[in-house]
Length: 329
Image (cartoon, rainbow, N blue to C red; front, side, top):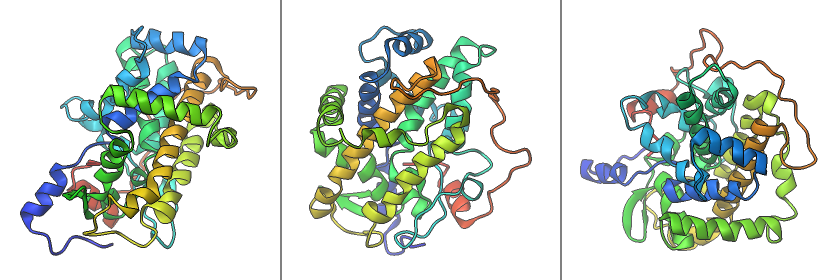
């Protein structure tokens, strides 16, 4: 894997210090707000009850919680849940394999499966179920960011680039710099503006004819398989859109590169919000909110979501991630 070899220690420090998480707070908020436009009335009541919120932005409000929580002592365990390190070979070949790529500490695919079950587990405390909702809202967003489904250079965190003439890294550019440039800022108000625009695109615009295909393979009785569909769908973009010509080390990305990937970023935010709504509808009511019906009569396994004795920590990618602190900066 390409690695930084010529940057000074101070440059590397600057790159990592610029890091943020997931899509950045604004991107995650936009995903939550899009989802609010497609959940059923019953799902809204169910989720607001678990969250203890009647806010008009109830999903947007909690969408970035998981990033804050993992910085705490209590939440440190959840750091590996934000990504799956696909040990593939972009840009030549992109793929995700659960047994190969999900480390023993967990990954975003396993976490989506685990916390889906925990939302419905009435044996858990109210706080545990509330947190499960918050995790799902966030992790469905994370799995739609291509570099959260990629091991190369720790998900792009060590690929030094520039954006708007500032030193940063490729992961941070995708998380925050591009989304905020698209819509003009990073506050909740900008997230609402973006969610409104993308909802219109889903309803009658760019995505109207493809949105039904976004729900293919969605089955709440097999959350792991569903999350793998999403991970593979998103990981493919690493080869075709994120680094089609290899890592853009040292390049300024706010020009032609930015223009080329804006449609992909917007579609991923829209897709994440639409899928999140369908997933929450399935959890709450057994229906996506469309004509498709799903079976919710399955066994809940709220704690053990990896095979007993499962270990996958010895690969170079897993060791690089541990050295990086299990973070997606």
